[in-house]
Image 1: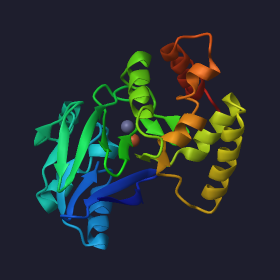
Image 2: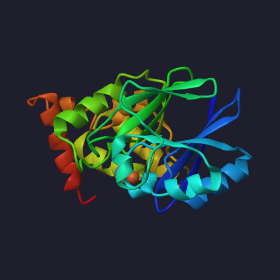
Image 3: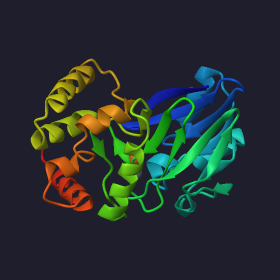
Length: 247
Ligand code: ZN
Ligand code: FE
């Protein structure tokens, strides 16, 4: 069984340690901040076996070199990570990664960056989605096309509703304000209130679930919000509205 340790770092990132209970094998999902990753390992008393990157951005792979120097752990990820750090294994969608007795499936989830990947453990129903899907939001479309991003979000939306979704940033309050500007569905209004209250108490809103996102995320709901458009175009319209949103 997989246990996840979440820790905040940088201004609004979350780092995650994925720990296979049966064997003690531990992976760092991205390396937003090397010192924070190493401190989290020490706090848990876990030894790092593997770094798994989602994409090449510095707040995801920028700590690879320092963490590898400190721990000797190999780093796996999409080829684009080699823009900033050497990888020991290149991953693509359809691959699987062994972490003790846990097998993580690699999902192609490009759009935020072209090569972005996510990791899914079907046994514990846990997904690490980097900057593809956020609670009530999604990553900016820096490199991909609406078609690619929509395909990626659809792939995540097809995971079981109860899947725990570990997104890499705490952006949920801002995302909720945008969602309210687009969508007055009761589930959205109720969740936004919950999010504002949780953040007021300084509680994290991550992990979320696929079911909660399907019910309240304006990007997953784009085809309902813009029913006159095809799904990718509807997604593009919502993405553009968020990019221009001054909430
Ligand atoms: Zn990013
Ligand atoms: Fe990021």
